[in-house]
Image (cartoon, rainbow over all chains, first blue to last red):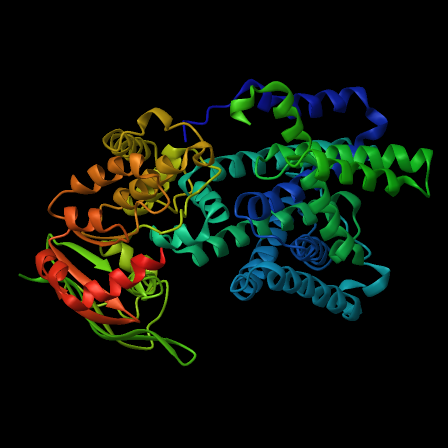
Length: 315
Length: 250
């Protein structure tokens, strides 16, 4: 509740991102992918970590954002910033409409509905070949220079800095949101929905707002993927993507924003490194890591860090 | 006297079982009214009907002069109806102060603000802290609720309801589960509530009821058995029968 001034450690991810830009030139495309997944995991943290909505359908919004940005680039304009807005808006509308239905339920029903909606969208995208390219993916996505000046280069430098800037602004917004009364009321809903009703909070409207905002940011992440890879494939809407982002967030720690940063980075880097060393067996190690985290460190990697650094009282 | 809260032939049936049966009830302005009855009499159901957690099968509920029978919980709270829960219903992982601030923010109408409302937030926090101070739990304001002993959690339960500045307060067994040595603190808090608040208390503890209530309603099997001043209730043979009968089972 105290004024949430920026703590120095909160600058760490940004310093790391800038340092990585100079230190790991050949890894910049991976860096962009990581930042996209961080943004995606951040969007999930708002609903899952803060509001306690357990969803397996976050890929629906990522995918809608990705396709919307791709279709916009192919048919309307390759201007990237307006493409992001289109991706965010399309995903937000999807979130608003689907949220109005799924948020009437809870628990397993809600989980299954979010999953079903993603499957529906994936099937629709597969079927609508004339719009989405179906199974072959959406080809011919050409993106103009950012602000008319910064061309997407072969080494992924522009893409990296573009993702970094979008992630930074999104983080600023979401950080503000979770510390504002709105964000605290989401935590209240997560902690005790019965009491939130009893103190006069319009719970469903609050949840729907959060769901819509979350969808918009997932859409931005999807649009970023489209614009930086200049391609949209069906996997943006896949169940695996929904599951993967949940794993990343749980790995890092839910309900604290930075879990998304740690979780996505650890997962993506481990995937990259392990897949290189052991292309067949790498997800075994990811799975093992997750089992250990869930069993022994409920708060994820950051929860573990708390336990090691904070006195017992503050756990 | 004017009624601030009234029910007219209020009924609630679960399947074929009537858990609230034609309840006509009036809570006067400034009331200190107790609702007693044996286990399973439908006391908590009645509170849930009043607060809007349950929808009645028939009958009407009036708050002030307005019919609130169909209003959702949030709207009733906005009109001044506050409640506590028999079983702690708290934001367990959050600090005590934030538990109260959440309620204060909703009451002040900025619970949905997406930007920090610095001035208003400071005001509610000061108000919330003052409330904790009054209830004698300001020293634990920064602790997560789940780390508090049960008796203090019961006080947080009341503090959250008071942060809504209700004109009608429904207390569902506020001292339930608290060792009698600690319950006096809770009784003191309830005793010191301002006269402007009409209080309906549900209670098992007869000592508490007779110390606090100026009017008592006895509920048995979902229906009102008798209502009157404490002396009348204490002398009523039917009440003695219901209660002495139950006491022996305890």
